[in-house]
Each structure stands twice: as C-alpha cells, then as structure tokens.
Length: 104
Image 1 (cartoon, rainbow, N blue to C red):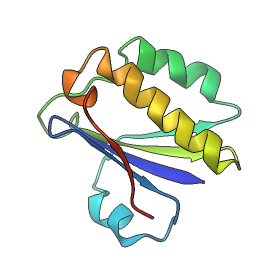
Image 2: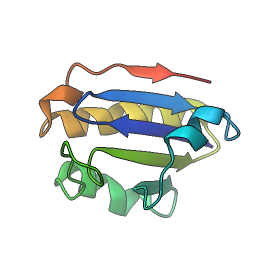
Image 3: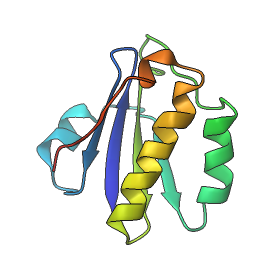
Image 4: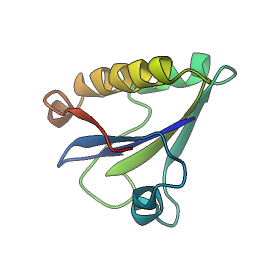
C-alpha cells in the first residue's frame, strides 16, 4: 500500500510507502480529503480526476488530498500517482512542473 500527499497551490506530491511514517500523521487533518484507489475503485476514480470532480484551490478543504493506493504492486502504484499528477496538470498548472518525491 502506498500513500501520496497532493498539495496545492505550492504544488508537491509526496509518496509514502511506510504507513507508519510520521509525516502522514503530521499532514493528516480533520475532514481530510482521501481517495482510495484499489482494484474495485480505480475504474470510477480515474474519470473523476480526468473530469475535474476533485477541485483544488488555495483554501482549506481544497488545497490538499491524500491518495491511498492498494494494488500490492509498488511500481504500479507509483505509476498511478504520476498519472494522476498529469491528469491534474491539465486543469491546475502548478501540478505540471511538480515532481513526485518519494519520502519513504
């Protein structure tokens, strides 16, 4: 399982392979947006990213999101995070130049 933190407008994508990582708890907040991507949800969730159903804005509640990816395949999960970042970049320019950084 992989967790990825998306932040906007100071865009960054931080990837965490260790579910016990302290940065996950540090960035998690009350009413945090979380999207779970797994075999049963990927078909519904990817079109939501492509269609702009997950808005990003520079105010609390829309400036960040956690992705929880559970495919038992680290390489696929990382590729999916990169793909979602590219989908977001079509609508949100700060994500276009944003690197996906592996934290742990």
